[in-house]
Image 1 (cartoon, rainbow, N blue to C red):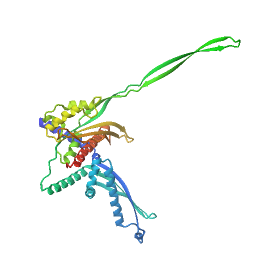
Image 2 (image 1 turned 30 degrees about the vertical axis):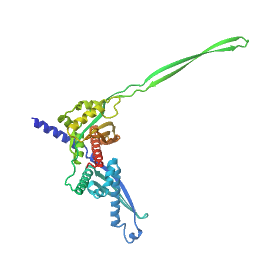
Image 3 (image 1 turned 90 degrees about the vertical axis):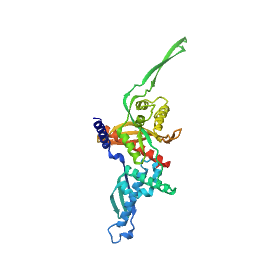
Image 4 (image 1 turned 135 degrees about the vertical axis):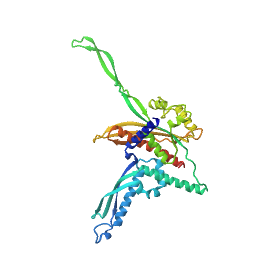
Length: 377
């Protein structure tokens, strides 16, 4: 019976993972190139040569690759792309699916234009970077006379999603204030007799106190998100452990329900995703399990928007924090500013799941790239 329940749970996780749109793994690219056509080459022919057409497609593919490298990539990944640019460009047919269209020869302008569109597979790029990193490591170790590279420190992680479940909307508080003034003056009538007049005026004013909406937040752990993070990190060659596994095997002073409560209702002066005391307790548990790095990610589900075709667009904001816990004092490895991701789906659930997967994968890639910059490949 126990084995059957485990199998059913594993099957459910697999189905959820398969349900996430594959678009989270791809980045769309589009560009065009226009080349001059030498008039001498047109004599006696109907258009530009095949060699020129081939060159136009090659340059269009180059521009598409350049656009991909700048499209939503972190600074760390752009630096890695620059380091391995020639090798990656040589694998573009394996990394990107490109198609050429609108190939137009303008006889009056003597120019040939070709457009390109397609997508680049993030997982394929990850795998290519891993292979290139392994070659660099092997060459470096061979130069030192060694036969194997150093072991990569294991990574423990905790990624949580937060959404607004209920909202208490308070109306503005308006207070009225009135002030009155009185004045006395002298008058003289037509007969020359003096008199006294009294007058008063009242001024009314109002003061409006704006009151914020109070949200009740719900924090959840997602198997699909955990699978996305684990997939990217393990593909890069790291041993990975979820915090739930850490607290189950090593002495943990803080359990997951307490952490979730802290994420759901942060204290008034809590500047980080979790309080310093709670972070220290989590790090102590990870360190006792011989983890080398500890990563936390908060994925805030910001809004859902209904599109004209009745599909849904969901925006998720990721806040990422990674610490090197191998020393007595943990040091920051990655603490990038919050980044937003958008995905669409046939309904809010599918769009939310796709956006969470995209954010989780991007966060895990940032971790890998940051570590690569530090020489840990």
